[in-house]
Image (tube, rainbow, N blue to C red; front, side):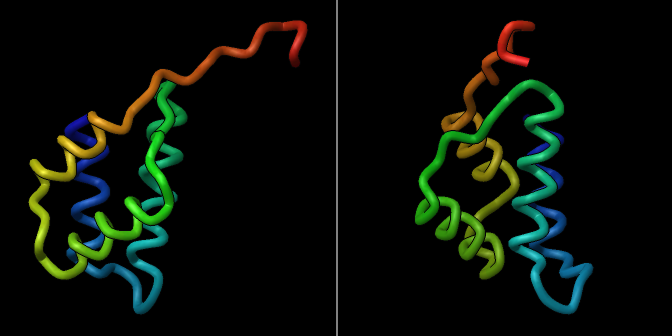
Length: 83
């Protein structure tokens, strides 16, 4: 989950866009995790707090990694019958 934490931390703290850095960072990490078979199981208000703390420089990359690991779940596979 180091890569996911790096992505989230980097996109939020380096401000590559004029606006929407936190929203974009979350969507990128959410897609990255899904492509790798995981989903983030965190409530919206908790996600907001983590992203705000990152933006304010109050959270380190290691703290973000711990938060991701704590809120991570293996994505359920769909059977062929569900497809």
